[in-house]
Image 1: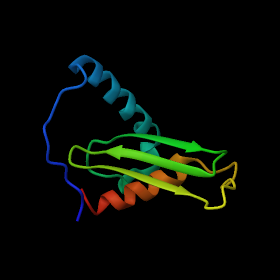
Image 2: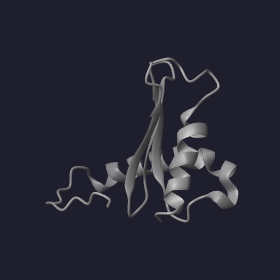
Image 3: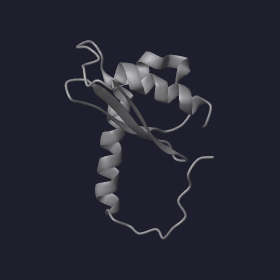
Image 4: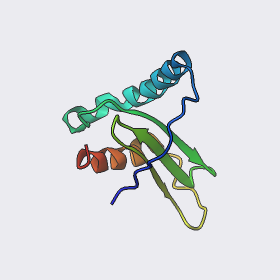
Length: 103
C-alpha cells in the first residue's frame, strides 16, 4: 500500500512562483523525453535528478498529478558508480518503468 497523507492543506507558494517552479521542473524532464519515445508515461511529469559524493549515489524525485515518488541508487561502500553514470540515464529510466505500472 502506498502512503497517502490526509491532512490540512495550506498554500505556501503564490500561484506565480509555483508556476515558475513547475515550469523549471518540467523543462529538466523534457530534456530527456526524446530518449524514451513510446516508452514514456502518459502523464504530465515534473522532476529533479541529482547525484552526491562523486557519483556514489544518484536520485530522481518526480511527480505526476496523482503521485510523487523518489528513487535512489548508490553503493554501500561509498565508491563512485563511475564517471559515465548520470541520474538521467540510470535512475530516471527505473522511475519511468515503475510509474508505467502505476499511472
